[in-house]
Image 1 (cartoon, helix red, strand yellow):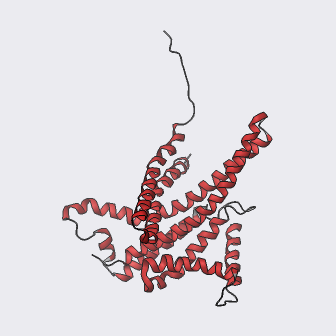
Image 2 (cartoon, rainbow over the protein chains, first blue to last red):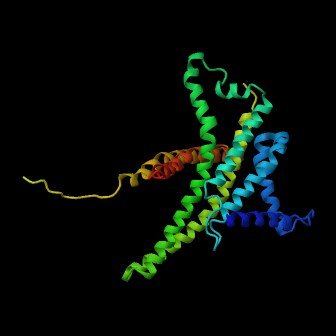
Image 3 (cartoon, each protein chain N blue to C red):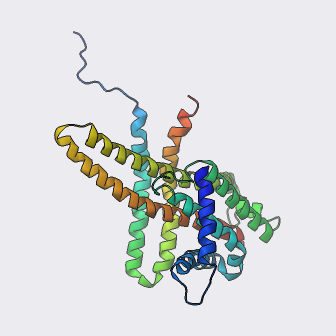
Length: 226
Length: 79
């Protein structure tokens, strides 16, 4: 709980400090903030949704990206050491928001036809709907939020478990094992460091993937029927 | 003749379950990334789009592995 409050304060502080004095030639803080904002806007929203729809959903996507990113990063910040997203509530909330958003986008774009199109995709021979409709229902309306939640949550839990294992093993080898076993500690410590770096990659990647999948779901909901 | 125990194993067979569950996603992610590399080698100018598609593909594939981890928590939750 404290970590998530800290994250909130950190995000607000970072963006207000970085974008307080905006200049044409950005300073270091500003260019860092702009890099992140640009990634969401250009590479995710406008690339997949197009200029007009991209603008509509940009605030939501930006919020999801930065919230997930900073909460993931706390998993490797010393003294915090646990990711804000490694409790099921946070990914679940974000997944529910994404779920509501893509259904809203679909219903708004194709009033009345969205559920029909997603449950009964056109161009399928009539008897096959017996198989296709349950599969589409499960994959679109049940598995999407579940996998969004589980992917983020399990990535963070597993990362945390791996780091705990490596550093516990290091502590055991250094302080309790005897003889030559102490040398194993060097190996586990090195792997702990390497996996800490790997966790940074995972944190950024998971934030990217979560935002990307939300965008893809919105894009699929907005797509015209064939 | 008595039956003699040559070797004994104790513990829970479920501990190897995740190892089995990881095989499929591992192969899947390997295929996705390998094919992307192959495609980029053929069409380097499409790299941007292919990378995005690769991440989407990886995300769908690795979800299975994470469901595998989650089953442990699901099945031990009631005990």
